[in-house]
Amino acid sequence: MRRQRSETVHGPYKHGKRWRVVISRADRRQTIESFETEAEAERVAAAARAQSAGRTLSHAVDQFLKSKLERGLKASTTERDEYHLEHILRLKVNGGRALSWLTVRRAGELYELAQADKAVDTHRHALSVAKQFAIWCKKRGWLLVNPFAEIEGVGMRKRGKPQLHIDESRRLIDTCIAENSRESLAVAMALLLGLRASEVAHRQVRDLDDGGRIIWVPKGKTPNARRHLEVPDVIRVLLIELAKGRPSSSYLFGEGDLDRPTRRWVAYHCERIRKLAKVPRVTPHGLRGTQATLAVKAGATSQLVAAALGHGSAAITEAAYIDAGERERTAQAATLTVLRGGRS
Image (tube, helix red, strand yellow):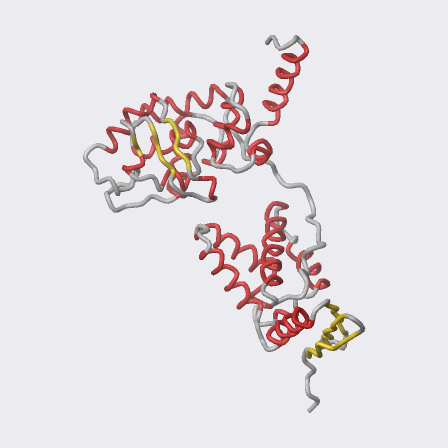
């Protein structure tokens, strides 16, 4: 029986003033890499040999996700990245293949397949995660090139989530206060403070500080998520009553002292209460965007809103959270102020 060809690595070889590594692939094609130093060439050759020895796509993905957790990223973020990598790399079919199988041509084919029956946001995010994965592998010498580097995402992403108008926001808050339950207060917190659903769910009694005037967010989705926010008077007394007599380590919105709600719990009650308030469908993320838009309308700059939302970039806040019309009106007002010699 004819023996199946496998990838082989030759070198380093001296070539003029440089050093070469030649990689012969199973399809008989060759890749020639040239380096200034023998040490650099030897490192790449060793990585290529290790790769051809059997490191699989699934193994590399597992190590990539593990590294994310070790860096302190939230498990929910890592789970989402795992979903996208499974989709774009088709790990159920290709997971057992050697990592060297992932060439530039195949990466393009995989992205084309990933677009089938998927929303633009879904397949473009999958492409973004695949690029991160390939960069990570390249840094470790597991891949010689990033096969996804030159692939451009197809289609226009959606910007932001549906938001509430001012009167609708008032009705929602009035409904939350009238119900005065831990569930309704959690929804009110999402709108009034612009917290992520997970940030609402994971708040502890000790985070409600200074007589209920401050809420601390010691950690979150990103490093910039660490912040403290002023609690509006409209819910301050209600939150103090909710926390009264409970251990400092218990979760503020937990049914019992050891219960920790989830972001899905916040989303469920957001949907329930918005129906009671008779306002359009809105997610906790949409409430977060509503808060940002209303803050800008009230005169806050996008930089201040970004800081309050736990973003490192005002550009992210403007693109994803602040209503485009509000940005235009703010820009128009600023322009008129300048044209009037600084007078509003």
